[in-house]
Image (cartoon, rainbow, N blue to C red; front, side, top):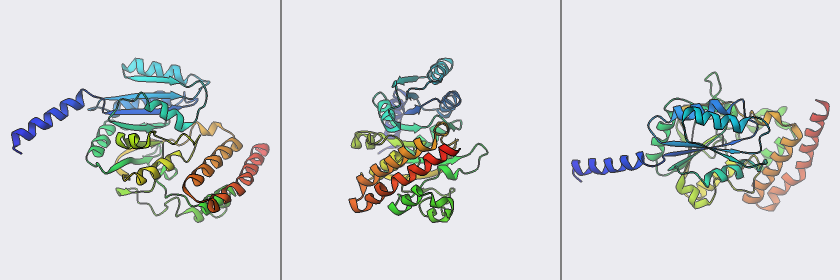
Length: 306
């Protein structure tokens, strides 16, 4: 192929990209009025050279989340669409509703308590284009002080015994028992393949979404849906990658802090059981079913005496 012919082809590709949506950002909200405006503003600063849209899928917020999201989009003259689900339909289902109207070549699932850096989404979308074997990628997630956020780091696929320990709160007394699962040997400065990344920032190839038929398995309400999608990604023949090529601030679970311990434990353990019933034989997942009531009982007592 001659140089001139190659330049013409690249020009056609670039013009096509300019006239089409490069990236759709899908954000699920529930009472996120403190965070959503800054998140939206950061998103459109993050897309300097690509076309992007943001879709807010709201799970029945009782505060001003929807009004703030609409107003922020209007003030920025930015393509922000809001889906009002009317009730809390769960994280995965709300993201899937956003997918139905998303126009982007790539899909970014981004939590409302995230902040992205200026021009950073340009960089990671281009990175994704250069790595066609990757189905999901996530960057270096840091706290508000710029330090690597271990609460938002990649994790290995969970094993039943590790999750039973979580249900019984054993790691509160012996935290090193979960070092393998939590990847305490992880080097955040190294680009690498990982089992799973956090759903707070998950950039996904549209071809993977087409293969799966959804972004997140609708059987999950909250928790484990991101781990499940990463496992489906590997099963479909794509890689899951971590890259420190960009950073993003993750304030980690601001909406969940408004929930009581029992509610969180009930839904966390239900999704845990759903995950292991999907991926493991009965003689493994049965232990989650046995010890789940214990974890819920402990959480109930925590709420009672808090």
